[in-house]
Image 1 (tube, one colour):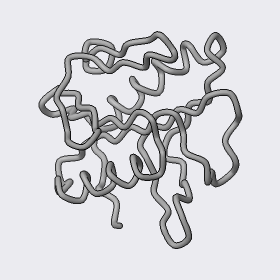
Image 2 (cartoon, rainbow, N blue to C red):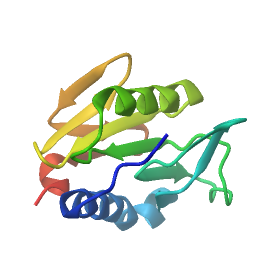
Image 3 (cartoon, rainbow, N blue to C red):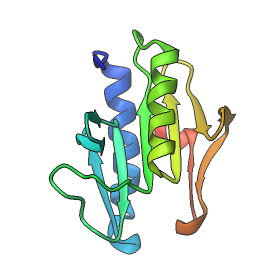
Image 4 (tube, rainbow, N blue to C red):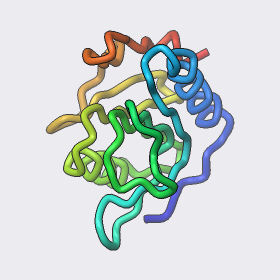
Length: 136
């Protein structure tokens, strides 16, 4: 799958999300990575904008699902391709699959469909990520 070309809004959102999780990483035993290639299965590698692993440092090319996978929209993204990528993360076993839209300043969770939310919750970590935490 060809990757979109990120711009400033995308980059700022990615930095804010990664920064949010890095701030709590030691307390919650998290490993936060950006743009890490992951092997979902033979022949399928995807690169989430931000991924959060819990407990164990990820392998050089992880083949075990992270706790959280976050995609950030770019202006040239096609929604059907983004949705397919989000569905692959869910099928792989990612517990929390999120989408951030820096242009509309909206957040979404992805289960069987995209749901717009005001904040993103990780109950097992007892944390919430609000739009104000991410978007300037």
